[in-house]
Length: 152
Image 1 (cartoon, rainbow, N blue to C red):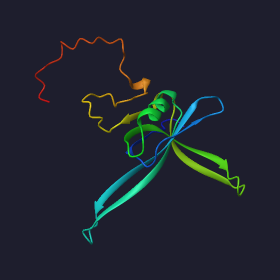
Image 2 (cartoon, rainbow, N blue to C red):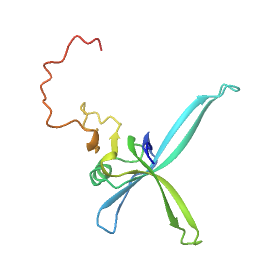
Image 3 (tube, rainbow, N blue to C red):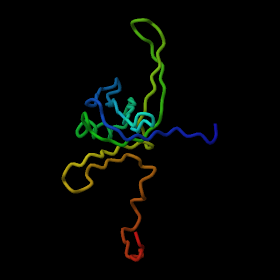
Image 4 (cartoon, rainbow, N blue to C red):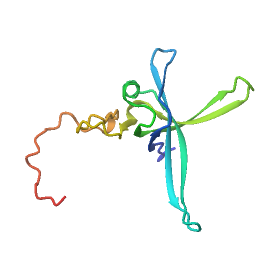
């Protein structure tokens, strides 16, 4: 189908420590549970309401798995970008087919950014594995031709 897009962007907090497992091929996979919430003021009562959604995230990107394993924990605030994927599996207890929908971070079209401040004053908490959108590393670093009189 031409003109389709499968892209998910979430900002939320981890509800539990990441689960890291080894696959049969020897590579690692990380599983996260991320909560996103929205809040609003109820028009009739004036009461503040909040709704939380939970999202399953699976990371196959080896570099991101390593970062998650070292730096991400329960309560971490993260931005993730990946693709929505539904997989079919068989429940061992009942033998029935089950379905799970997850956000998958795999390959070049995925990213993870840790949003929590680490108190060190630099941007070392930014981790991005999205080579298709990274600027060309061969570009000149000379910015002397930029106009300094831009008002923002």
